[in-house]
Image (cartoon, rainbow, N blue to C red):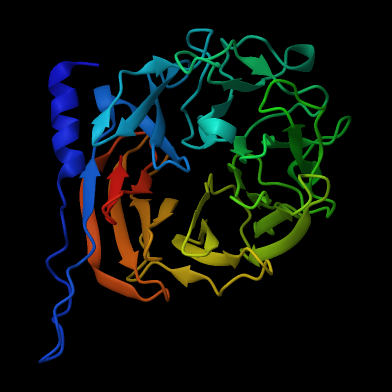
Length: 394
């Protein structure tokens, strides 16, 4: 990483760029400062940033660089406003893919701050899945924390990757790598299922994959799914269904018994005879788990009560929807939420970044934030800073 970029990034991370259109306080009331949101670019013209924050407050980030059809994943840490020197994640060069936005790498942080990363393999990827199928690749940071272990394929029987897989990890050593694919021996979106490979020893070994969703909903072939594990040990998955190939509803899977069983519930309906190539996001904060998704050109989030599992009503991003996609979400210590998303994105086409801050009750504050120039095939990521503000990376 070039020294000039590191200095520039440090300055950007410490900068509090606030919206200046926040409504004025009532007469006689003390003015409350708007929550600071800073915006930075991915280093070295990288794309598809993904972040995870550990229980010590360290932010871990990965990003993609190189040929979108066969490139590499890089990992950095953010500590005291400074990015560490990047480490390549994939042990086989060119084994990651960015085409389609949703097939790239996902990150989770588990016990003792160990980093876990999973991604769809490219055409150059090794090892392959069964009979040469596209692999679901996984690696973890080594014991010394200085490099990543050799990448591994976790698909033993449920081959047929299309949309992107994901990973979740908790502080008890559980790691969940999840993807969707047809049940062995059948084809078609309506026969796709969500599969989970579960490790109980911090990713050292994994049991063979098993089906996570008992309900026959199908899964949207070229949509991503998102995995997450919270601080209480519950595991979650957001995925898009494809029942009868027209019911593209968003589903939430929840496990409170370490991945043994998953409860399924439909979060948001959507009738569409096409694949929207959508992604989803999770975060934890403010006494709950936050889930964000796209439906019909709009992005939404809800809060999941960790005690009862009950969900709040979906909260849409304010304003007119304009092809809103690829949400990212974070919460600070006050329970405030920032929801970020892209607009104008398409196949082989970049777009722009938008975001909005919400108070702890889900009421939007300030104005919609704006930045231009989200690169082709990219996503956005967001994390809460120690000072209570937020940083968006795109």
